[in-house]
Image 1 (cartoon, rainbow, N blue to C red):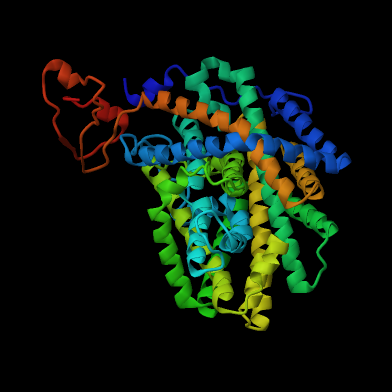
Image 2: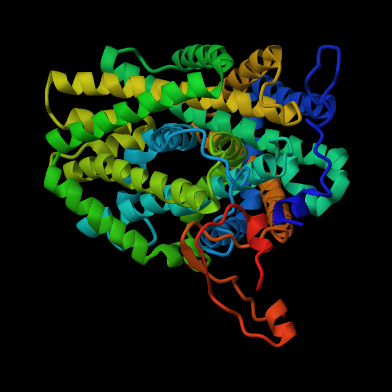
Length: 567
């Protein structure tokens, strides 16, 4: 029996999990939907009615968890980085996310566009200038801030928090979901990844608990990102049109963005998200060209190259840095926040990545999801953050003071500092449009993913519930903004990510068990030998024969490879 049939023979592939057949919850999993809705609406009501108390409670909970999270998140994210590297280069690199002869649904450009737009588009716009400037002032790795050395280290730390480690989280969740959905025929939802670990219990209450945790983390992850984007868009509208920054304007922007996103989610992935994602990429390319032409070109290129080398050289040390002996809050304020944000965001982004990655091999998937977005991020931060740092080191300054007062204005004061007259207004307006489209893309995909989980893995959940959860996301985002802005957003997402991180550990165990049914498959014309772990006795050793290296001119599938003589 071939590898694929072996791994599937014990799996009961019901279409979706626990969908109601009638009533207001028709097409949804009633237990998961009701529990998730009650918990989220309770958070919205408590935050709206007891704003100060809610902010204090969230802050106190994060403070209590921080000593544990400072090493736990570091260890988990470091493991995922090495685990994904192994999956992309090890014995399973040619396993396909689908049938053995299946081909990708999207072109590389559309695929990468959607990965980046849904993954970090809004966040990277917010932090591309703010983080380098804040790290430039002080961080644990330099003695003197505001120096040339501090500028390079600030860029390195920004690359670290937006680079390979974060995308390892996204790629891990996305690969597992795509593997079980497209190769094993299970519904596209988080609980499917736990079948090898939980057995048939994953269809009952245990599976429901897993999906509730995934929804909880996703909702707060999406709301946090939307809140950051709305604050930044508010600052941009003030910069371009002179509109005064206010909570009322932030709530209005939230309502408009979520309204557009909820309507656009009806068009599905191929029409809505793909078009917006490709538009975002082209507009982002225009911004990059603009900065190279009107910014300090030679400095930007040199700083980006130097900081990239510094990042690569220090990657391992930064990955396992816990700040345990330094006695500062830097680790909690930065690394713990970012890893918590990536983890909370991962059910949404992972499921979205899985939806658009059918037909890719493990190697294509890992290289595409891990390396390409990281490279784009380095260029983006290098140019935007480098422009701000150049102005502080060699220009008139002023960006540090502005960012210290409000991180949301960082992008726009940097454009203004270029001193290019009316072109700065046009560039700021383009940034407002870019933020808006990234917000719509993220809210669009987030609403669809939440409903897919609640519908038991159904990729086409009921329209009524898409509308309902669009409204719930808008209300939660507004509540977090009212409860204290950026600090409350950060505290909420770090705390919400912890329960789902435990699910991630179980997903690792589930994938490893499922991969036992796969065989190493060589690509067409590729010289290969089956890997040999020293603690496992091979069939050749048992027979007293030596392993032989073969040339497989054509390998149609893993099952065909398993049937070849001499294996």
